Length: 160
Image (cartoon, rainbow, N blue to C red; front, side, top):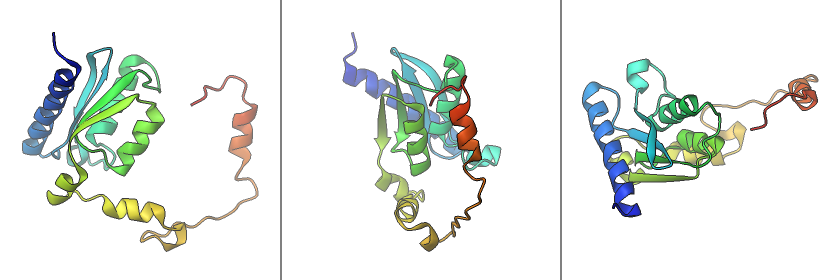
């Protein structure tokens, strides 16, 4: 019987296999799995350049596939395995999907050394919106809270 550490290594090795396959197919060197109850629910690799989609990171794609497979927008009770420490966008998706845990192989530093440096995004997120490299401008409109009021009044909403 496999120990928990051996199971984690097994899943991470599959992520590394996916990432390696993606690296030679033009997809980007990242792979991810979503595992629930000890079985793989979804697996994916980076498809940013393949799909011309900057959000098609391995982790986000695996989360999307897992949600579809499980018929839920939340992945409570599941874990994400990734060939590399998730970037800020993937980190957001991980929290929004309510995963129970994340296991990763390579570090941010290893990714940065290969040309995938997320430090700018972390720095920019901490800056006031008006001081970011890409300007963010808040424009108050009198009806900007109308969608939220509609949401709060909607009796059949699904909370997330």
